[in-house]
Image (cartoon, rainbow, N blue to C red; front, side):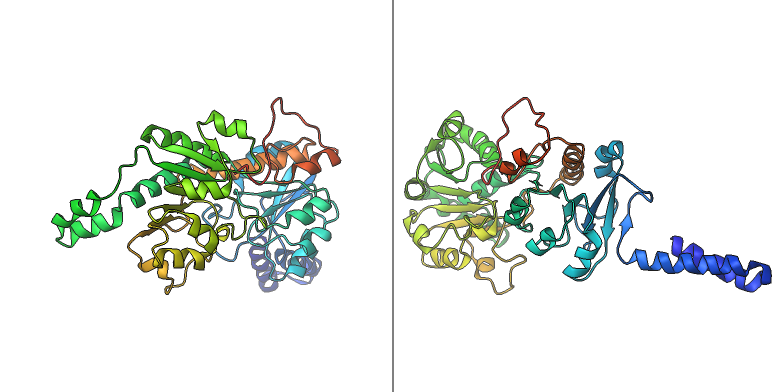
Length: 399
């Protein structure tokens, strides 16, 4: 907008001004050059010199979480500490590095925050992520440089737990098949298709990873009368017991469960956590549900398990490659229900996630521990002050 105004002013002076306005014209021309050069690198929400500068990449396309390109919700917490958010429109990683080298903080959005980027940050105090998964950030590199990485593991957990229950019930009761029978004039086939199936009451539901979402899902599942198991090496067994869930090994969980619900995060350790050998351990009548991350499952192994009737069906909100290829066999299977990675979506989710990002940034930039941290063991190595009066659960299983 400033560049447009300068151009208009320049045109007016050229048409109407005399020799006496030459100096003004030269000044405007200089300002225009400076503004054009700067606009390549940043679009700041606050046009002023601020104490703290927070940088983020401008996405190549509109995103659901920041569709308006503004940062008013993040700034609710940041205004009080004299911070500004600067959106940089860079194409290459090297351009991004040049633009953010002096950043006090980064918001991971629109670009992967790689080791190369992290190693070229001069004074970054925190990297914030507006979601649960931090696979777009090299957390190991951030840890090596004592930079806390924050995420938002609990803002939309109710929505994801609701979605997990929906997929469990819809897959278990063969909702898509029943709906298709009703629409295709096959009304009489519906009841016989379910007549040989057990009822949900008394069956066993197993959770792989028992973080916030799995815990809420267990609360929702309990009234259906299911037995519940969980495998999570990062969570204390007593914590599982508080939710009426029996802690077991992964092998035992797969062997005993009638429904397996995957909630593991996208980490190096959890990549392809479910392989052909794991699906072979499951009952042939078992269902597989995934509202966690697609990369935790070897998708080819899942497809083969379904094609070979090694398991009975699947309910998936996430896939290994998103969006899937039109030729993905999962898209044509009657015993598979797929939703397009929407488990967390709601009217509340976007705004509250953005506010939380601002709150985490404000905490760290004002010298305090964040509420949530993916790499909490770096916090004692910083000058940040712990202020929370309660124990904070963190780590790979926290989501």
